[in-house]
Image (cartoon, rainbow, N blue to C red):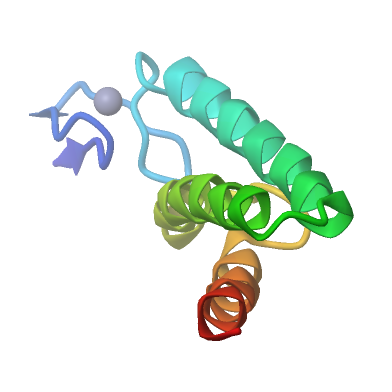
Length: 102
Ligand SMILES: [Zn+2]
């Protein structure tokens, strides 16, 4: 029996895509991926260009929160942002730590 990994709906007639998401959830998941990818791209720029520590930290926080959400979708088999959210999460967790330790 198929079940949707986004809304947990189950049923004999439920159709899911190869990532295990039902038809109803597919556009929602696609919109979430777009939204959080945008946040990541924007905050990568902020982090790169900003000279203020507080601003860099805020960018890291927003970016990491979005990356965590995208990692969930990547685990389902989706392609999200580029570089993949998993790498973004690792890399910026390190950057954030360096900022705090400075
Ligand atoms: Zn669903």
